[in-house]
Length: 172
Image (tube, rainbow, N blue to C red):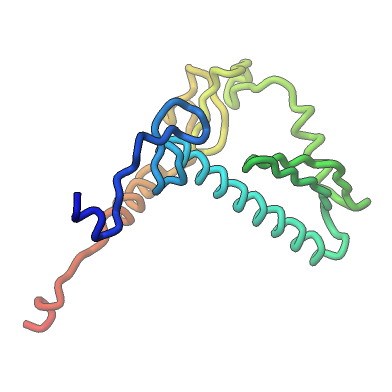
């Protein structure tokens, strides 16, 4: 007991409950929170910072364009670490062709197989060539896929396994 008095360290009088009333015990190292609540608080703070920086970059980018392209007005509500971003209005310039592209995609209709034009819905298969196929034409040999799988595989292997050479071998 005397060594505690000499060093100034004292054991806590009792266990400290988490300040979020989750039922677990907290510690002074985690601001009197349990480890889960402390982790959640840190995650919320990081998300708030990321949202604030992204909104800041959107505002800076739109002001540098001088009215060309889309301009968005956003409201940021911060309450107890949560972030809500609401888009109030979006304006496009009169000669914008991107609004036409959006309208075209919305009016496409049902998804169909590129080869047989059969409706596929949610069961369609996307190929690496960028097309959508039914169950019959999903394999590359069935639809005459122009994608070069051999070159793609070689590039992936070369990227995953770089050539390693020791300096000693070059000197000898």
